[in-house]
Length: 220
Length: 305
Image (cartoon, rainbow over all chains, first blue to last red; front, side, top):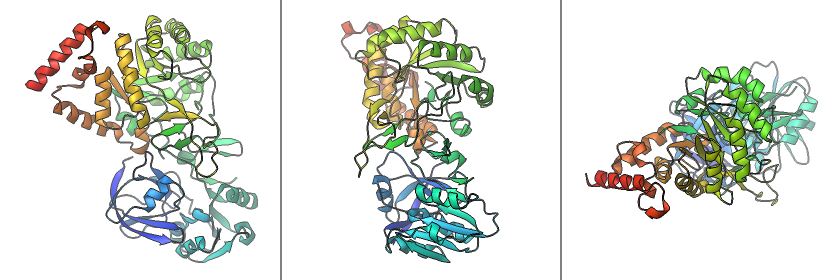
């Protein structure tokens, strides 16, 4: 059932340059790792899509990079503030994998803490711009961190089932290396439930509506 | 009053329960051939509104009729099909095919395509040509961004339109915060949301005076009050667009708020509010002054009663 719920903010925590926004879960289903929620951004017309970073008991937690007016508004929420939450939406990662390796770049680390928890803490390779950004790696157990100019693809070990989230160039590089990887893509999104047709990404010359077909897509 | 979605703002097959919350579902625009739509980035939030350049993505009329329409009919919601094209022949082709189907209640002509100049002659020409091939109710969806909307509306009426849908988006541009380059891959896009409200009100107000056609008012409707104002300006029905993106439950909420607004002003039902904004106008300017005066007296009675 598509219903926007109003939830209270429990806390916000700084994680490097990012903010971990923790809201009351109530009866909202946290969904599968890689699925996302549309979060109402105070003072903005459109909500923002955020994958679930963690599902602590009774809470939903989102890792947010304050890069624009909507994400800045979300990061400025205070405990007790109300926020509209719609989800879980989209298709998450397929957890039926033999030898998982999590790969993340920048704020693409967002869905990986929850994914790691669900997979029992598999190895991870995380790439960041600076050591400050890399503080987010603390949310992911068993993570090897690389900083620019080293790329995650240089630290990836062969023979794994790769589950990746990060900027488009990173995802393209990962899929060239591991054709069977599961990749979580990102796009501007107005609705999250198939209405706006705004969130398409072009993959192999085909436009895919991320909220319906993704955001996690098979690489091949 | 019926509450509809604005065309292109809802995929009923992806969100059937949202479609069922409406009095009628309006499809995305259907064109003769399949269209993948524009390359990303397709949408952007602006200071107060939203831009989109989706590019009329749709499966084309053949696939629409074969694959989507039967499934849409199962929803049990009256169906309006938005008809689009890039030439007179396109409109006629799609309208003839779609109009022949029993599942379809109404055709809405999307007369705001970038490649179709919306001068009165063109609107009249398209409406007349489509009128000749279908007996279904025919609504002309117009843009407010024309020199003389009243003339355009009269042309649609004279050509046989049964109603008007007002308004479509207006062109806008957003630049990236850092690079100062257009955010949308296509450059400009259609502006929707709150900035359209006064534009839609003016368009509805004008066309209510200039024609006798029933009007579906739309443009930034997010609260019951917005719907009420469109009714007052002359809309008989109201459509919700961008507000659905943020809140799939917007229709039910707006309906509830509208009931409260109407009750507070003493209106027994939405239809009683239609056109009341014209009640105090100069009678010599309004061909329907008698109607307006009656409405005025009616409101007076309601307010004092």
